[in-house]
Image 1 (cartoon, rainbow, N blue to C red):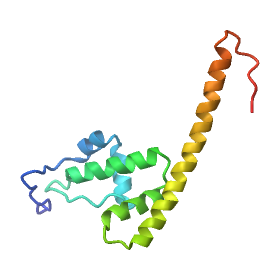
Image 2 (cartoon, rainbow, N blue to C red; image 1 turned 120 degrees about the horizontal axis):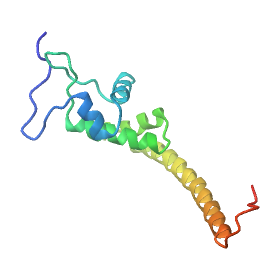
Image 3 (cartoon, rainbow, N blue to C red; image 1 turned 90 degrees about the horizontal axis):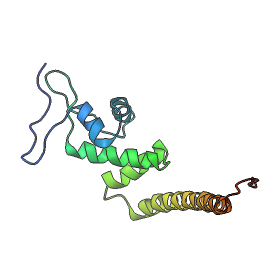
Amino acid sequence: MKDQTPEPTATERYIGIGELARESGCKPETVRYYEQIGLLPSAPRNEGNQRRYTTAAIRRLTFIRHARDFGFSVEAVRELLQMADYPTMPCEEVDTLAKRHLAEVEARLARLTSVRDELKRMINQCGGGQCWPVPYY
């Protein structure tokens, strides 16, 4: 099989799936899954048919992982990546996507703030040495 991996530029290096997984905080299975569903572009392969990734893949995969960790759906991540991948996308479309995702983030922040406030209340209530009964809401 002919080597399908183009030569890296002077500032770029190719890494395998294991190193990509370590550097991005994902598992190799997750890398393959994101490649399969199109969030991560298919990687070129070397003579041994091993995937070869660049630092751009590390950045993209790290972004995907962070977005997923923050609760964005796969489809929402796909939309966010489209904004980055197509900088000439019409502004109206970008604004609509960004506003929808901003509303989701603000709703999540409101829920987290509520949980934080409740935890603080519980800590303050227990601070005097008497924890029970703690009202359950």
